[in-house]
Amino acid sequence: MSDNIYRIIEVAGSSPDSIEGAIEKVDDFTVQLNLPRPDITLIAGMSDYPALCVHRSHGDDSDLAKAPIGTGPFELVSIEIGTMAEVKRREDGKWWGGDVYLDGIRFLDFGTDNASIVAAFDGGEIDINDESTADFIEAYDALGLVKSSKPTANTIVARMRADTPPYDSKELRNAIQLACDNEVLLAISINNEGIPAENHHVAPFHPEYAELPKIAPDPAKAIEMARAAGHGETEIDIISIDGDWRTTTTDAIGAQLRQAGFNVKRTVMPGNTFWNDWTKYPFSTTNWGPRPLGVQVLALAYRSGEAWNESGHSNPEFDALLEEALGVFDADARREYSAKLQAMLQDSGAIIQPFWRNQALHHTDKVKNVSAHQFREMHYEKVWLDA
Image (cartoon, rainbow, N blue to C red; front, side, top):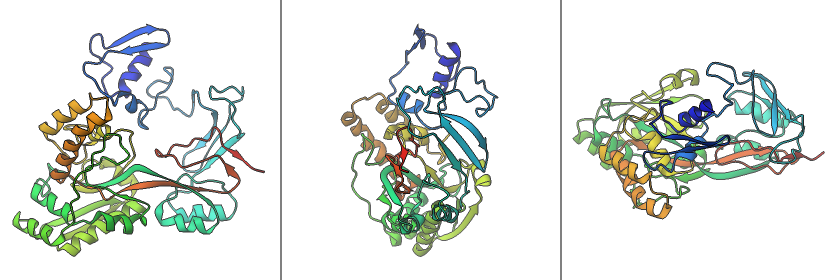
């Protein structure tokens, strides 16, 4: 039981060396957490994709593929990294969710080249894809495939590290932010497959979202602000991953800054290089998956000292207000805090956040009862194929 308790605490973001009395065994199937302060993101954090909960026999160093103990509708058959994975319906036919209709599923890895996936659909090799990015939606549609799309809090941010020159200048960060038109970036980058964002990383889909006054882009004012701050000729090097909509989005941001008069350099890295230091680049773009709560995102990405605080944003007043907000269960009451937090983050110039992406996928008409998931999860337990 103690191993399981520790894993719960690790998922919640705390050390296994827990506070005295924080973990209480109620019975063989119940653990009670006695928190030192209220935190509404606790359960949401446990369900987040980095929080993989495994059986206590798994250990810290074992390979999950070698001991795939789980409770899902399917069992792992095989996995070959970069090529294929296969699962089958549970052999005993018993799953806590009821009947499962598919005999099994094969996952084929076509790499990052979406053209290969289009060709696989066209050749009848596959029935469904994992994701349809905006630049290939027309190609999938042209094949007569069924499209499923859902608005989400999936996004990308162009963040500037406030602790790294020249972005330690708030005036420069605000100028760069003001030079970008998020509506245009939405159109250019992902063909309007989403909605504009507002540079504060809380989405209209989040329960505590607060609508703020719109700030219109002003490129002419932006370059004057940069010049006044002594950065009219400063080289602005924007780094991105290579090969997809994230590259296109970063290119579009760079183009808008150039049009405004900024001295822009673009650096593009392959994925296996980019992710080695993704939190450390002075100015780069990063895709962020959706979370159920706005304050959950703010705590992960903008609270001082957090591991994923890639912008180096640090504001004691913001941290204190966020700590209060995390303890407010009622979304309407929490919105009052969120309005202030959103405005503070927006004013800091930490990020250019151009849009919230739709999550889309395509499938053949043989596939039934499937839809895009807002968190890009795959739920095939009630899916079937027509003959």
